[in-house]
Amino acid sequence: MKPEIVLTVPIYAGAVEQLDRLFTVHRLWQAKHRSAFFGGIRERVRGIATAGGFRVDGALMDELPKTEIISTMSIGVDHIDLAAAKARGIAVTNTPDVLTEDVADIGMALVLAVARRIVAGDRHVRVGKWLDANLPLTAKIGGARMGILGLGRIGLAVAKRAEAFGMTIAYHGPRAKPELPYRYYANLSEMARDSDYLMVSCPGGAATRNLVDAEVLAALGRKGAVINIARGSVIDEPAMARMLQEGDLGGAGLDVFVEEPRVPEALFALENVVLLPHVGSATHATRAAMGQLVVDNLVAQFAGKPLLTPVA
Image (cartoon, rainbow, N blue to C red; front, side, top):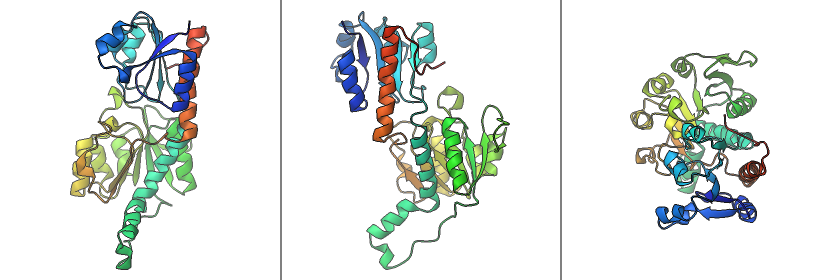
C-alpha cells in the first residue's frame, strides 16, 4: 500500500502529480469539516506536505499522531512549530538553495524599481503624462551603499548582484564572517545609518520579529529605502507605513508582508513604494525544483533513507 500523507495547501502542479502517483494524498483545504477529515485518517497518515503561509502547529501534529515528517515547499520554516515537531520526533525538511538565485533577482529588481521609479515611469507613460512632462530625475545605483540584513545564501547572492551594479556592500548578522570582503556591522541601526538601501534577507520567526523597527528605519531615514525579500514579520510594518506616509523614510520595495495576502492599504497610494505579491521564487523552474525536493524528502523518509534537506 502507498504511504498516506496530508497536503495542506495546493502546491506546484507537477509536484502534486508526483505526490498523487507515489502516495495516497488527502487534501486538507478541500475538507468541509476538519474533525471528520482527520477522524478518518489520523491513524494512517505518516507525512504532511505543506508550504509557507500555512501554520503547522502542535495541534495539527496531534490530529495526525503517526506523522513522521513535515516536508515544506519553502526555505523559511517559521510557519512550522519546530519545537513541537522535535518533541514528537517528527522530521522537518525545507527547500533551500534551489530558490536562492530567483529570490536574489527579485531583491535587485526591487532596488532598481524603487531607485529608478520603474513602476511610476510605466504608469507615467500609460496614463499619457509623458505628453505633458518628463518623469522627474531618479537615483543612481552605481556608488550607492547597500546594507544587507542576513548574509546567508540569498544575502550573498544579492551582494554579488549589487557589486555588479557598482554598489558598496555591508552586512549585519549574528556574527562576522571574516572570510568575506564586506564590512560587518554589529549594530543594525548603525548599518542602516550608513546605507542607502537596507536589504532584508534574514530568516523570519520570533527571533527576528520587528528587528527592523522604528529606530532602524529612522536611521535609514529620508535618504534610504528598505527592501524586504525575507518575511513581513521582520519589519515593524505599522511603523514603516507611517514613516513612508510622513516622508521620514525614503522608499520601500516589498515582496512580503505580515498578514499575506492582506497588505496595509496605507501603502497603496504611495509613489515611493513598490509592492509585489510574494513572488521571489515564483518561476516555473524554481517552483518545480522546490516541489521536487518536497517529493524526494517524503520518498526518502518512507524508504528509510537520509533526508535530502533536513532542518536542524
